[in-house]
Length: 285
Length: 83
Image 1 (tube, rainbow over the protein chains, first blue to last red):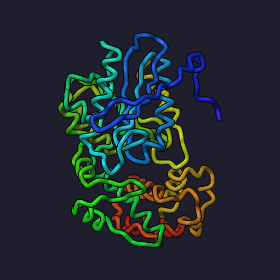
Image 2 (cartoon, helix red, strand yellow; image 1 turned 90 degrees about the vertical axis):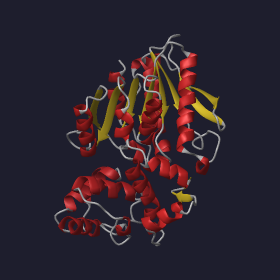
Image 3 (cartoon, helix red, strand yellow; image 1 turned 135 degrees about the vertical axis):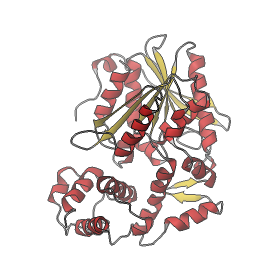
Image 4 (spheres, rainbow over the protein chains, first blue to last red; image 1 turned 180 degrees about the vertical axis):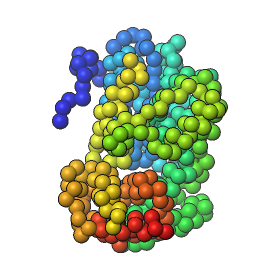
């Protein structure tokens, strides 16, 4: 395996600084990758994907943060409430809480380097969180970076619940999506793949539509990157449809492309997508 | 089984099997036999099959029999394509 570190990274192996940020519901674990320069060219807040996807993609996020820092950007990696090393249990996590946590982290970056623009960078469900935060205050963020954004919360939840159905299958049992939904509808916490989901969190995620969130974001630059294992990388058909609609509606400047790579957020073995790192570097060169 | 080559490709890509998937036959056992085939992988395979073939797989159809072998999975996809 060849090293993914470029020369500039080897020259400046700045150690990431871990710290806790005071969130409205408890301390939030943050990892700051600061550039060598006293004044960064810009700042990015990374919002992770959901549940196990966050663990599987952590290495990619850290690597990208280091590469962006070598280019003069300050990058903050946030563990929202109830996830990672932050306070709270997963069953206490709520969408509104996560949005508030992201809000605090973005404010921290803006405070730390006044005058430096803060961009939001989200992977999968983290992209929806970035869009949701930006939609709250359309003039606050001038730039969004999406990695493989989730387009519809309901589809995402349906796929997540399948993990439990698949796990039951492995145990020689049988579960139905209907029964799991009935449990949530009854207000019960549902355990899926080791994560305890609160019905409130599930309902909030199911209501999310990337298209709707982006519609309110006039004047915000959006870069959208996807990875695909196809021989000739192309955006997912569902993404293409959404992007065509948005371009027709003259929504914010939006550039989207697909690069060759493995779906690292979904793979058990820690996997990297070097082309995605390169494509992201190019956007912040 | 028209779908078997596509199914092998989806398995190879989704489970990160590299060249191992090329050697798969209809009789190759899957679930419980391949270490990479955990429940997250099952969901990833289901999603990848839906995307590749433009089919919709119901939760109730995620059964051990379907994922028993490469052949049983390909036969399932064929049935979905004919439906």
